[in-house]
Image 1: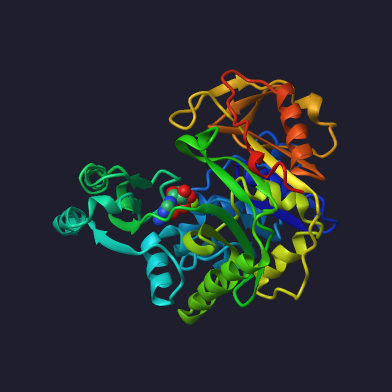
Image 2: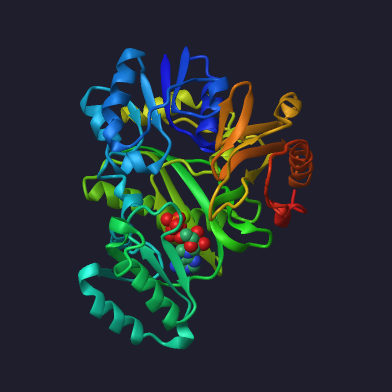
Length: 431
Ligand SMILES: Nc1ncnc2c1ncn2[C@@H]1O[C@H](COP(=O)(O)OP(=O)(O)O)[C@@H](O)[C@H]1O
Ligand SMILES: [Mg+2]
């Protein structure tokens, strides 16, 4: 069968790599793809914005695509699944109504609150309620800070501000409602209590009726070592999580993820695709931070290389709404992913810098280089975005995986390359 992957990041390269190992696949395509994906899939440079859904449909029909897998959130929230399904095509991903789980933080918060799903306590305000929001903030106790303020809609990881004081919170509010920093996404906001703890990502595959969790992963959001500096799309990740015991895992599943899935069903929302729960754990109790409606990036890059099953039948079943009772099998090995970012990231990003060393590490066993922001320039591969490459290493222990991964990185170079040196360091001594 022919499969199309929509997207152009490390997540999509990893999906393409995993899917290309399936005997069920004849031809693999990607829209728009990147330099790495183009080595295993035929890439077509169409943008994934709503205006181009018609062009994507034409491409699917011309190339006899049997299954389309949507990577990024924006086309899902814009209704690409509804659009293609109505034309009779099989698509992996939630429809527009279900994608609200990521597309609207207000929607998700209200869903959690009305179904007793543990999450930070929150208040909601619309742009028309500026005065009400200001007096709410003025009424907060200074010693109860920080508070968190979030844009309702998609904001590419930039719509969340942790305010340390009333002044900072009022300033952030001004950014949302007066300066319109987030446009439509910031017309509604959530102000919520700050929960201090550690975060885990649990990605589940869903067919509307059933849900299968993937192994856990943790990602690193800050640009610098020691979790310092600005938030990014993700600077690294590792899997599995040795510090999550059975009791905590069951709580995450039974108090958060399954009740959410059932709550969606109660609201007649047929959730298919990936349901990604961003969880924060405080004192052994998990709380829902947010849901995403797609595979995580860079979590996918550490989870899929540990999956032994062929992923294609599972994705097909999800898209068809008929997930079988399969057991996913996982490698005992550990995976570590380090993101190589371009100069200036996350504020800006540098493009067109030549990447060296890629050929040299191609033959290294248990090292996978997934491309994110790259493109071909003649016979050279050049940078083309903030996050450029994801170097993933797999080994018996985190320590060995770290050594393998960081050794590979030493061979790669491009102007202004930056990466974190502490990915998975905190679990290095675990087995
Ligand atoms: N209530 C909260 N308490 C503590 N930290 C939070 C809270 N909400 C968000 N954060 C931090 O901000 C990050 C981004 O928030 P999230 O809700 O995941 O939005 P998005 O991923 O859309 O930017 C989280 O990963 C977490 O580190
Ligand atoms: Mg998040």
